Length: 201
Image 1 (cartoon, rainbow, N blue to C red):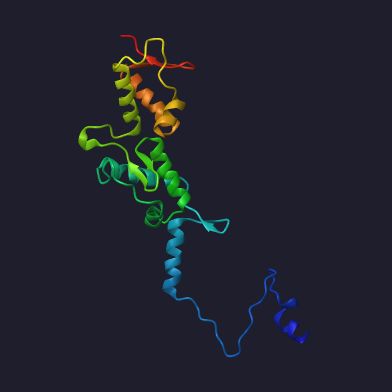
Image 2: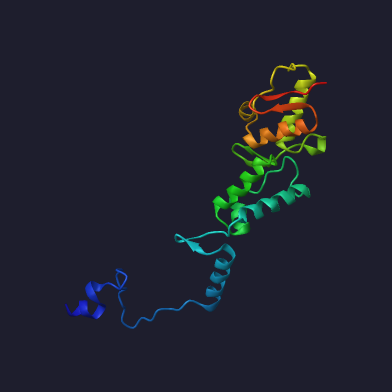
C-alpha cells in the first residue's frame, strides 16, 4: 500500500498508463537539440499528424505528378524508361506510399505511363522511332490503321471503350481520349449512347 501511494493510484498516471519504474541513481537522458530540430524539419515538410500518422498536404500527389510529367516532357525520362519506384519516390518527396500511387495513377490515366508486370511503371511510346508517345495516341494509331484497311463500314461501330480497356490494358479515360483524338482529326464520329463510327468521306 505504501508503494502504491508513492507512485500514484494503482501505479498509473492520469491517462490510465503505467508510470515508469524509477531506478535509484539513474537520470533520464534528454534529447539532443539537433535531434529535436531534425524532427521538427521532417514534420514541417511532411505535414501534420492525423490518426497518429504524418500526412502530406492536400494536392501533394498532383505536384509529384507535375514533376514527373515535366521529366517526361524534358526527356529526362525517355519513352521506354522505367519511372522511379514507389519507394524511391516516397524517400525523395517524404510522403506516404498512397500519395505516390495517386500521382502515378494520374499519369496512368493521362496515358503517359503504363504498368509493366514485375517491373513497375514505364514511360509510354517509342518517340525515337517516330511512334506515338502516349497510350491514347498509340490506340488511335492502331484504330486508324484498321479504318484504313476497311475493317469498319459506315454503319459498323468501332470497338467500345470497355473493349479497348480490355485489349490494351489501359484506363477508360485513356480509351475515351483515343476516340476524342480521332474525332478531333475528323476520322470518326462519336454518337452518344451508340459509340464511335467512321466519319463520312
